[in-house]
Length: 120
Image (cartoon, rainbow, N blue to C red; front, side, top):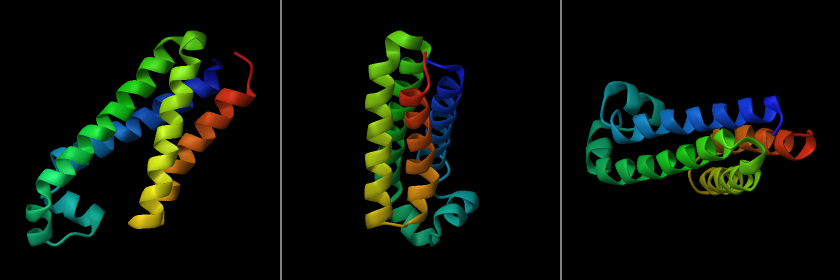
C-alpha cells in the first residue's frame, strides 16, 4: 500500500472512532445533540440505538486500522472495510441526511481510489 493510501485509511478510521465517541458517549450531551440536531427528549429516547450504531463505527475503524497495519498484505481487508464505509455512507445519505455522503462516504471513496490507483 502506498503511504498516501495508508494515511487516508487511517484518517477514515479516526473519523469512525470519533463517530463512536459521539454516538456512544456524547449522544445526550449538549455537544452531541447540537451535532446531530436532537432534542434532549429524542436524544434520551434513542440513546441505546445510538450506542449500538457507535459500536458498529468502532468495528469499521478497527477493520480499517487492521488492514492499514498489515501494509500490502492488508489491501483486501482495507478494500472490504472501505466499501463497507462507503455503503453505510450512501445509505445514511439516502435515509437520514445527505451530509453523511460527504462526511462518511467521500473520505472513504478517496481512500479507496488512492489504495487502488497508487502502486504499493
